[in-house]
Figure 1 (tube, rainbow, N blue to C red):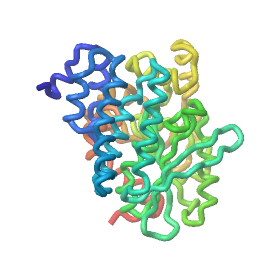
Figure 2 (cartoon, helix red, strand yellow):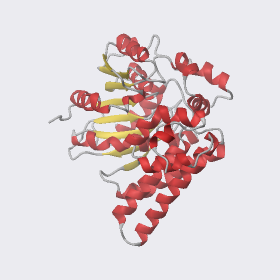
Figure 3 (tube, helix red, strand yellow):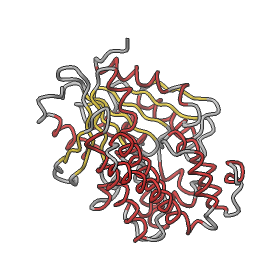
Figure 4 (cartoon, one colour):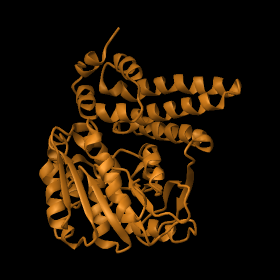
Length: 364
């Protein structure tokens, strides 16, 4: 029987790079070691990745349907969520086959939507109308047991989605903060009709406009919380959107173009796909538009930037530059990888409490 060590020394260099880069994220996101090892063991080359993860997801879907037919709804919901996670893993940075990529996204959404009515804490799926210059968006909203709570807008990065980000909602709700996880332009579900845009503040204007229509939310206390490429989106939005009370960024780029050539091959391909670029060369040029030069200095709200010293995608100096120019606090986690997924205990509670205090929630 293969082991996790065997998986990490996979014969295909692309598969090996993906596992080396994102293993902590996979495990923290709910993928079991057993599923990881058995799936990777069936993969010969990167081209097999999507299909084999879909095959693993199919096992969980079958378990979910069997549990439903047996009246075991709690077990069924858990199995649908396992299937959702595997389908996400199938497609998230695999973009070479457009049909398979689209199928993986559709399967992920189908499984998560199937589980949605029975999720705890409860989740409401919401449509967020576009504003001039920004497309329609989709979000997941969860409310704490307080009246008119403040709201944290949780942003996905390049290849994460509102569904994967919303799994952390419990920690926010316990602090009396509502959680709105959003697929913005070129992200998750919204990537089916939109592409990445550098002026993410336009999308955030639409989101906050929508929050203002909800009488059960306090639109005067809104924060943004972003990781990876959303570690650029959150500070960028804060520089232009005065209704943002506080902003947090984790392992985001100051200038995405400066990082582009050293990114994993699948990440370059994913950015090419989600940005709508026609080639890798065009994507490289477009990446340079995602820059905070002359913009970070316009941030006036409280800002916290976290970065891992061993981030293989985005050098920690990029994060420090955001904090320095934005007048924010910078927290460097020694030994931390991308998103600091390998040692979240060193920053996560602090970041949650930092944002909660600025939004007027509770930390005790």
